Length: 260
Ligand SMILES: [Zn+2]
Image (cartoon, rainbow, N blue to C red; front, side, top):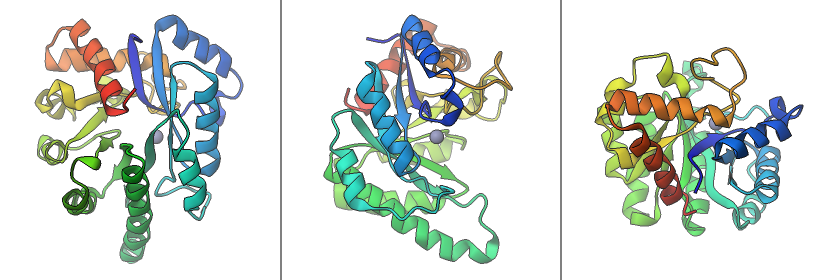
């Protein structure tokens, strides 16, 4: 068992190309495992390659709703990815309307919804959870998940990554049997404390989303999986719970969520 689990990293990102071996050896030293997340075809392939080559690394494969590459989702290719042994989740996928101009909102919602539904089908048919990205689109996302839940029941499950909503929205995801994950943002913004306090410990995952959003005391630097320890510490602090107990729960929850 690892000491920590980073449930959402981008170790496949080019910002690790110069020193990935060192980053991986720091993970080994600190007992940190991670789910490496793809955002398009190339990044998904790279996540699989990394997971195959390293104990303690797993892969999620998918096409991000606002991937810049303008890739056409090729179902056959992603189906092949999904059959890989170390692929334990489908994503990141979901909805993101944060940068969509008002006049394009409807068209973009239709496009992203169709793409997201393909990921749902892929996840359900492979008995894998979804790794979901959602920004400024929670009502739409919930509507899709609630209707798909009726069709797929317990086969539909997953995690809402980088969760940044209030307790009422969190509850709706818990009711659908989804988990939520928190990043290092918790170390420097107090907006999420209420949600962290409210969320049952077994519904939370720890993540870094590295190379983005490094936690205090590494702010402004490139983030990396070993810093997930700071996320676990701050969750324990906010919840006023024993650090060792929270640490263990974050690992156990990830193992359960991703069937490791
Ligand atoms: Zn991500």
